Length: 257
Image (tube, rainbow, N blue to C red):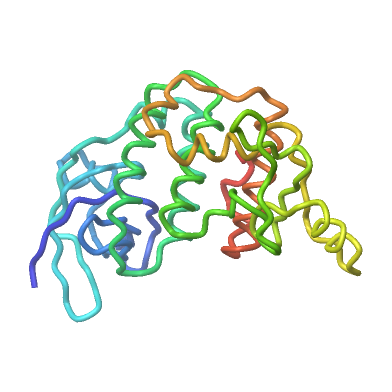
């Protein structure tokens, strides 16, 4: 069967007999493995379309459970990302994590569009790309339904107090293990367990920032950057949350994050 789809190249590896296997995040089929004998060093349209970070349209031949590439044409190559080391590392981390998150052959159109938006904005950013990476990760967690609970205590449902109609979190905590907010009483109980869970104080606006990342469109982060201390804390929280709840850690590109 011959079919076509738009897609983003997540990764490419060499296979036997001079062939290559491409991990393609396709709009129509989700993440799929595509075999090809095309050399990415060539200068034709298809060769350009199989390089990392390429967003293109691909004609595929499906034989039972296998996909093979007939031809490809670049829609956008994001070539400039590869020319900037910081951008390259940020994009590499996002693509590697996205590949780990996606199940095989399950369409994820919202994540697909979010990834294109991320690459579009990353191409324009000049520095501090970690804030944009954070925004992407939060949005993907939200799309997958694995966003932490930010409205009330996850163990007893107690809500934070309000000050002039605004929720105040300074007496609450964030628990990685429990998956969101926990009130002071529950935090004390959890902290007394033999194996202390990962608990963070909420004295630097973590919840407000997570909410902001969750609701704002990706293009809003073209020039927004967190200060270094806050960025480091949020990175640690999100990284540990993803590791605990999605069992994803030890990525090759993790030196960026």
